Image (cartoon, rainbow, N blue to C red; front, side, top):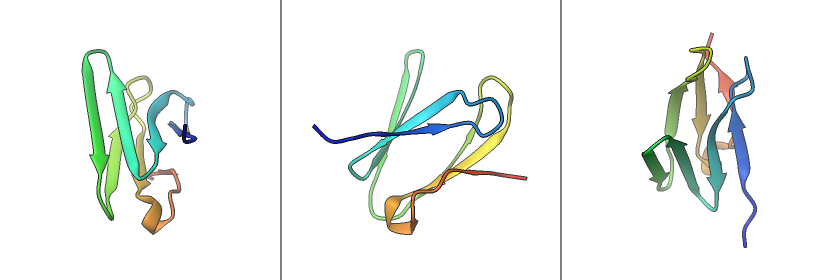
Length: 68
């Protein structure tokens, strides 16, 4: 089983997504979205504090960032 990396809000640390083996999975209630492919950038607004966070695919160095 592969390891996963949690993608958390930089402001309040709420779990926003999980990254595993080239895919990013976002789950909230009944909603589930999986993003796969070579290169992608995903921006997520935190459901708790409304901070905008951005994550990029591993081929672009998976580094959670907080938008200014």
